[in-house]
Image (cartoon, rainbow, N blue to C red):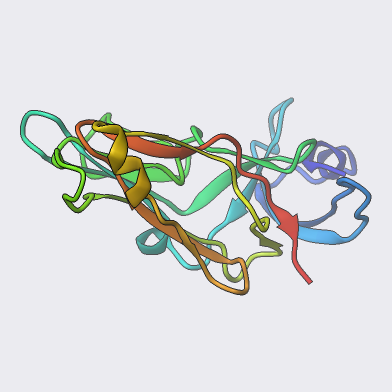
Length: 185
């Protein structure tokens, strides 16, 4: 079931709905925000009750080392694959007009040596939703020098609701190859 099915039942208002998710063999319901219900192509989002202060991607710019932060209140969910669409910024704000960074990514252009602390940070907090993170998340990491990649150490809490990491190095960064969600409970 998706937001289009809700719409076809006569509901045309954007809002939170319980949808039965059938992925891969799960037939439980999860709370999803349906957007664009008055259009031909409504979209699914997950509202982040923990707020934008706990769901952000922080990068530091090359020349000025300016902090560029994208904060999210909802994330787009591709229900067919149960994947987060990390480059959907509809419910995101930024501290630098026109500059957005993908959800769950970080990077910096400040750190140069192998032992320098990384300044880029991301934070994911899906507590209060119907979902949790998978046990493992495949990640891409680019850093110069290459030895700095060993500094990437993401942390996830035992409930699999909160996840964060710092990364970067000479305009390097980290990003998930893909980011699935699972129904919790």
